[in-house]
Length: 330
Image (tube, rainbow, N blue to C red; front, side, top):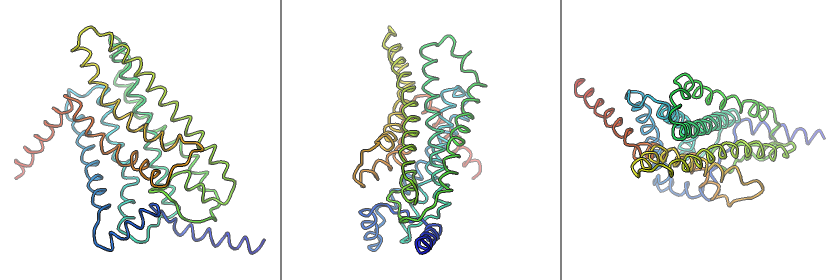
């Protein structure tokens, strides 16, 4: 018993020094070969995508904030969603970039817990905000005469702030609980970032809690998806009853961008967290994780700017103002 306790303490000390956050065996071997050859085939595209996500979402955010024509609930929610996307990707991508250029791919246990907390808290806030946006579109299209009295500026502010506060508070007990667990197993996480299931599998305690975690996450995801899906089923039903083709097209255009973001975000999240007992090949796990951690935030600014006429005009105004500012400064 004494020897076993000593081994557990040593193993735990090693884990506290650093959790090895590996990408997956196949990916690591490929990355090491490329870095030996001096060819950054993974690092450069990921860096470009990250820069685009930051700049693209900042443009959407400031375009909405600076154009008075877009000061309404729908665009207010879009601007906050874009702002959250910046921090959502910043929670994981910089560490991914660091892992690609460093042979020692490690992260401390505190860093791992913080990454999990901020990544999932921001993701939760985005999910709640997407649900709020679906309800907003439902009220706007299905009950247009009462829209301005229901979706008041005060209510919109409360919903926006409430989405963020709830998203951050709901995960706090879970992260605190994980931080109290004893870790004495292998210190390798076979994922591109710290996530609940891979970290919990490192704990030298009863892992049946993993199933409970999966059920809680699944209920939250299914509940959000059902609200959004039911809202859009009702919205589409109402739109199809509009007599004029122009009216139908205008109504669809206001919802198309949000629906696209919803399908991309929740589609990849469902693949990742609604698998229950199903297991995917490691490379497929990585692809799914990249979909909702990197690719979804990459496409969101494109969807909002290309699918929306008002947003295009606002972005052009913002870019023109920038040119005028630099010209006058020069």
